Image 1 (spheres, protein in one colour):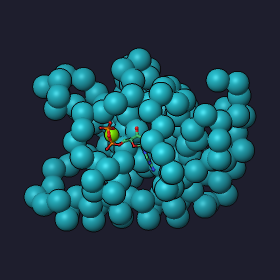
Image 2: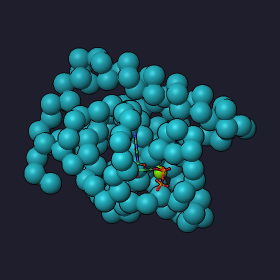
Image 3: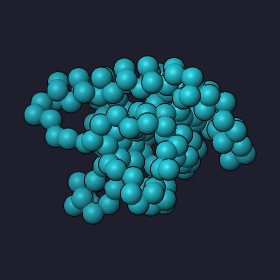
Image 4: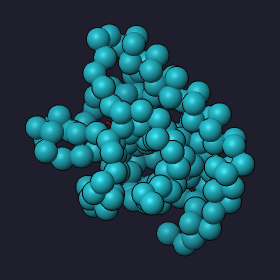
Length: 147
Ligand code: ADP
Ligand code: MG
């Protein structure tokens, strides 16, 4: 069984693809965390729970894809936490529990289409995470264990 997948790491700078400008910032995990993904985990968009420095547990969507910066030889793993933060949290410890798969990665012909797809992902994540079998992970010890 690949899911749930538990991951934690310090948030690093991404490649400034302007996620924040789209209103959907994505906190990037460092290489070592990406390398610890199960080898047979499909790329695409996942939903689950997240917290920053053992703080409030929040809904998230997470994408796993091939990084154009490294000529698609390296995977990237980026989390959009469904929450409005007062400040950036680069260098903080992000923990995630990936619980379900939403869709494969794909190219979009326009920015509006991309933003629309992400908003659909967020909606699906919100609904799925309210199901009892997913909601129960909100209290998982992993999220509160010493960093
Ligand atoms: P980068 O290319 O450095 O990843 P982004 O535009 O994707 O830049 O912004 C990501 C950063 O925004 C995160 O590392 C984090 O510090 C901050 N941030 C603020 N709000 C959120 C959020 N709701 N989800 C994820 N990251 C957020
Ligand atoms: Mg990012």
